[in-house]
Structure formats: structure tokens, C-alpha cells
Image 1 (cartoon, rainbow, N blue to C red):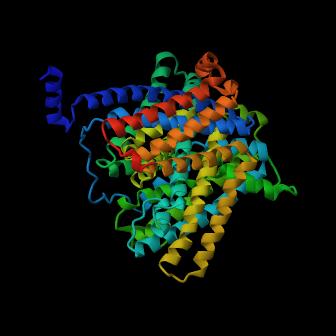
Image 2: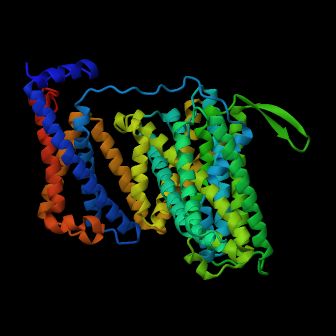
Image 3: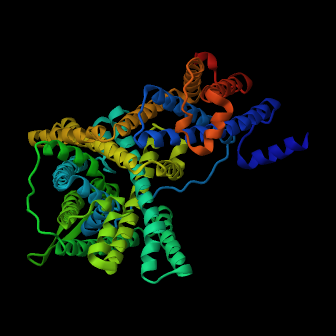
Length: 623
């Protein structure tokens, strides 16, 4: 017996059952080569997609040829992912997995849930979008925030009714998409759209929050410290300490959420209280420096259209109330609520206080948003406010002095933490749920937190307008589907409630129209969102065919695309990132067809190895 075979037998006795004949060794070696090639194709296609999305997101014209290239690169990306996972998948190594807790901790109460909801809603985008929007659109921005508040109250009321209906029917509520799965099932395009929209929206929000945090920590904070006399090494140390705080808080939420869930909830509630006090104080300072203006400015004929469009744009600062449903399982069965007017407390069950917390969260958050917008509007900020990195901090320094700029900086830092971390965790949960539901490979569920980090990294380099637009379009689309689910739930349970059925259809329709209104602001964002939904569902359909069927599907698709691009080459070098433009210049216009051809060839060879060398599949039954 050869020494290599002996070592393989020893390894097999500990890590799994292996076939160690020559055919299997050849297959494993080929899969190692395919995985390396797949990693290269995956990286190159991902980088090219970043360049093309940056171009379209910055306002570049989106032609049919450019959309064709994006679809082709997505096929290469899918092929690269399949090839990359061939080699690890060929070794049957079992890893220990943490078992989920059988009974969740009941640590959240009524007021703690409100703290979680407000913290997720009053995020760092408030400090940028509201001042910029006020400078650009004036009182229209205030009206848009008021309209968004009413729509959010309607959504939270529909969500509350859906929660009660599902609880009475014995169904579990975990986020808005659970309304859709409870009413029409998981294997449905509407549930897929709801879950996918929530995943992309939270990822884009996390990326935008990361951009704002980086701008604050690397640009605004050093200048603020310098003006306060903190310079040199001390300045750098504070900047690093703020970054470490964010990373540490994220790590604690990811790794130790089960162990320290109650303490995390209390700390976040305390941070939200500090942020609310600081923001309220700054609002009063702004009102104290307001210029005398007409209380209700004159409105133009096209104001209604502007308000509707602007509402869709600003909705990014309103949808955090959904975070309450994500922790509904960790809330107490019963909680005591204090009646401050009668100084009494009464006990309620979570079926009632969780919906009440959601509605109250929307009301409190909307009040802060509208008051802040009004204070900035009557402050009459100059046009150069839009040129500032964090406009609200600039206004605080101009009208409140360095002390109030420091106070609002603390509020901004807390808002960054309470927005970025929940958005990241929510995106990871949604992607993991899509994997468990069968829309994505099961291995994605185990690495969803890494996938979200990669997506955030890709989106981080997109223009801010693209991130805001994709967040608004995706979340409003998902909210509309979740809202319609109340109608389907009432039909499923045969409940006769004409008022709630009408409310479900009316609020859902308005929300859906708001989502598509983003098209008239940034057309490329809606096109990119629809394309992403289409391609992801197409990949899901391919995965439904099984491992071999999906490889055949992707191989045929890339082969067809390769033939088309060889016949009609597309020049897109001008839209690429500088780092990969050299690869394009080296291979010329044949770069894309060569990538497609290589992907198809490797997938076909791998299929023949599996079908005829190691008999993994019976390919004759698949053709």
C-alpha cells in the first residue's frame, strides 16, 4: 500500500468516508483547479459589476447593451460561485454547529421595544438627508415627512392587525415577511420578493450608514477635536477608539447576543434616550435662532407631485419600526405599563403591547423627524450646507457653537451605531432565511454574515444617491407586499373584516406607488433593483433543478451569452474601475466572451467528471 493511500485512509477514518481510487483523486484534483478558476472569475466579475453599478448609480445612461453586459456578468458570477464551492464540497468534513436555543429569552418589555424601534428609525441618514432636502425643496420636505408619517402609521396599524391575526391562528411572527409566508406559504414569488427586498434594503442602509460613519470618523471628528484643542496622537487615539467602539458593539451583537441580550437591550435603550435628549435640545436651539418667516409658506401648483416624489426619497428614515417584530420572540409574555396620568400600572400581554410599541415608535420617531425638519427650515440655512459632509453638524456649529456641535456629534455617533448594527443583523437574518427556505444554497445560511459584509463592501463604493434610492425602492416594495398579506390572512382565516381588508389594499397600494416613484428621481436605481430581483429569482429557479441541473442551466446560459458577445462585442471599458481596466485592455473586447466561454467550459467538464468518472449523477436522466 502506498504511503499516500495509507494517510488518506487514516484521514478518512477521522473526518469522513472517502473513496480513494485513482478516478476520485483525478476528480478532486480537477475540482481544486476549477475552484481556483472559479474564484478568479468570481472576483473579476464582481469587480466589473462594481464599476458598472457605480457608473449607472452616478447617473450614467443605462443602455440596453449595458444591461446585457450586467446580465452576462451576473451569469459569470454565478458560475464562479458554483466552481469555487466544488472543491470544498467534495470533502465530507463535518463541523460542529451551534444548536439554536429551544426557548428564547424573554427580556424585552414595552418600553425596551420602543427604544429598539426608535434607535433603528432615528438613524444617521436623518442628519444628512433632512438638511440637504430642506435646502433643495424647502417646505415640500416638511410636507413629505408628514405624509411619510401618516403612511408609516397606517403600515404599523396593518402590521399590528396582521400580528394579532397570526397569533390567534397559532402562527409565529418573525419580521414582516412572515406575514406573507403565513398567508400564502413560502414557495411563492410574493414571499420571495418580500424577503429579498428586505435583505437588499437593509444591506444598502447598512452600507450608507457605514459611509456616513466613515465620513464622520475620518473627516468631521478630527476637525472637531482639533478645534477643541485635542491634537496629534490624542486626536488619532480618539478617532481609533470610536472605530473600535463600533466594531466591538457589532461583534458583541453577533457573537454574544444570546448571553447578553438583556444587557444589550438596556444599553441600547440608554443610548437612544441620550440621543433623543441631545436631538431635542438641538431642535430647541435651532428654533431659538430661527428667522421670522411665514408659518405656512405659499405652495406651487405642482406641490402635490413634488411631495409624493419626495416622500419616496425620504422614506429611508422611517422604516425602522419593523425591527420590533424581529425581536418579538424575545419579548415577555406579559408586561406592566405605567399610566403616567393616573400613576397606575396595568398588565398586558405581548399580543397587544408589541403592536402598541410599534405604533408608538412610529409616532415618536415621526415627531422627531418633523420637528427637526421644521427647525432647519425656519433656520433658513444657506445653500452651502449641501456641500458639508454632515450638514446637521455644520448647522449645529454655526448656530449653537462648538458645545452644541459636540452634543449633536454624540447623537450622530449613537444614531450610526443604532442604525448600522441592526440593519446589518437584519440583512444577515433575511439572507439566512432565504437559504433555509430553499431560495439560496444551504451553505449560504452558515455564512450569511460574511456575505452581507461583502455586499456592504461592494455597495460602499456606490454613490450616496444610488444607496438611498435602492433602499427606498426595495423597502417600499417589500412593505407593500407585507401590507397586502393582511388581506390574504383574513381570507385564509375566513375573518369578515371589511375595514381591515380595505386598509390593507389602500395602504399597500400607496406604499407600492411610493416605491415606484423613485423611478422618476433615479431611473437607474429602479432598473437595477428590478434586474436584481429578476436575476436572483432566475438563479433560484436554476437551483430548483438540483446541483447538476443548475450547472447545466448556467452552462447553457453562459455559452449562449458567449456566442452573442463574440458576434456583437460590447465596449464597456470606460465604465470599469481603474484596477481592473488593465485586464480589459490586455484581452480587448473579447474579455467578456472569454470569461463566459471559460465558465461554460469548466462547468461542462465538471458535469462529465461527475457523471462519467465518479458516477455522481446520471446525466442521461437530466437531458
